[in-house]
Length: 404
Image (cartoon, rainbow, N blue to C red; front, side):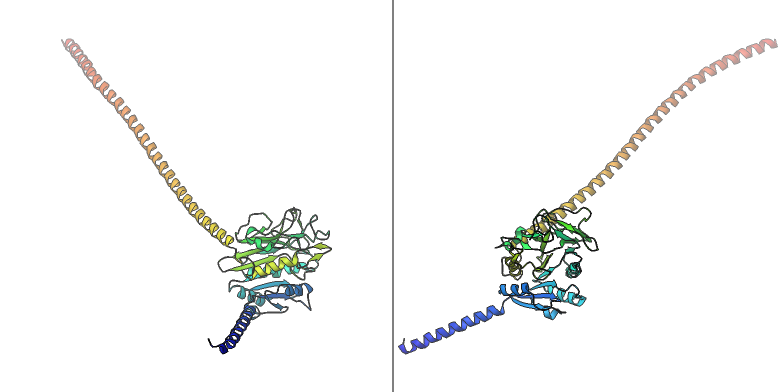
């Protein structure tokens, strides 16, 4: 190779390498997932929201504080809904915009709710449920407040410690979380299925298979009720003392959608769960919220856990087999009914046959009796004839003698 071409070649390699690096950097920036925060009614700045955006740099952020349309959500991978101003009206048009975006599939929607505390928190429950109902979710926020007199943050029962103890399918969300998270005056979650409300505890069976618990209280938690309506899933007259679920996810494996419902918000709501320290209590809020966001956009673990997919498939197969078994049982039951009917008919025919045999025997007996009577009558007939003949001879003899 001519020596004079070597510098040119080296320069060309450097230029191409720099261009490739620039392309890769630009591509990486362009392909960052987008998270839209609907902070409805937010006025000014929120310190925790700013901290979230500054801490979670793996995604692009967009904040909406007023009325919005589908175009404002278009292209987002995840939407976080927080009703900041309890007096701000969430219109049907805004709900339909969320629904249209969500129906595209492959989306994560984090809906936040609150307790029914009379200070205004209760006004956050209807908007949350309005969204959940519109998108076809089975998750609901119920009209109570969860309290924990034993395990709480700063000695107040209305600040129950939120323990990040997800179901095994979502274990990735607990990575790096070593302390509780703040749930300041949270409500209770519930499951709505076929017109019925069901409580959502740490360990109770649910009517659906695709809801996974994420954050729970200690077993010492209970509920308070402040504002009508009364709770739908919980008995306020006999308040349960159990481990309540304060955050859960519902996964649709068919279209790749995820719905997250939390009883508090990551920011605002008096004091959000992104808090790192509260009343001198160390918390894992920032780590946990970051885990949730990165998981929701597909940057942490499996967004749709394969183990959950496999379990869902197994449950579907089990359900199918159970339906087949049920159909077979119904068929067997039907055949048993037919057999019983046939047996009853056979018994009836047998009874009728036995009755006929009995009647026949009675008839034969009566015939035998009649034959005996006929035989007797026949015998008596000759006797009567003989007696009559003798009597006739005697009478004739007497008459003849008298005539002489």
